[in-house]
Amino acid sequence: MKDKKKFVIFAHSGTFDKLYQIITLAITAASMGRETYIFLFFWALKRFADEEFDVVKLSAEFGAEGEKLSKRMQKINPVSLKELLHDVRTMGNLKVYACTGAVKLMELEESVVRTRVDDILGLTTLLEMADGAETQLFI
Image (cartoon, rainbow, N blue to C red; front, side, top):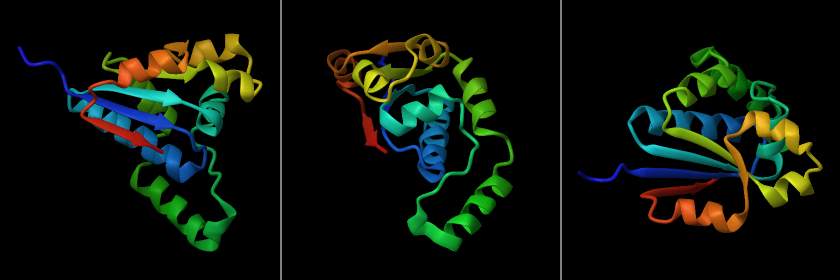
């Protein structure tokens, strides 16, 4: 039997457009049967820890165009990102992990983070998990 294809996202950014991309790519890959991992760092980790998936925070550089884009994104996909993520995670092939160092750097409460992710792991373990992945993205 052939091993499942592995899809890994190293999630760093916490702006809504990138968070939207992280979650939609992950749930699509998981729905296609891929063994899917989201590794959380910095602002993406903070958004996951605070469960701020649907709060529209865009970079100031996007200006009015960014506001239009976020409205179109919400119109096209009105289901909340939090809800989508939860539903797909129950399928079992989408796992979300926080980086130990990033939890400390972002001054997040470890006990809270643990309730939002599958585990908190060090870089060595995350890189070992990513080894052999057919797709690795940094967002």
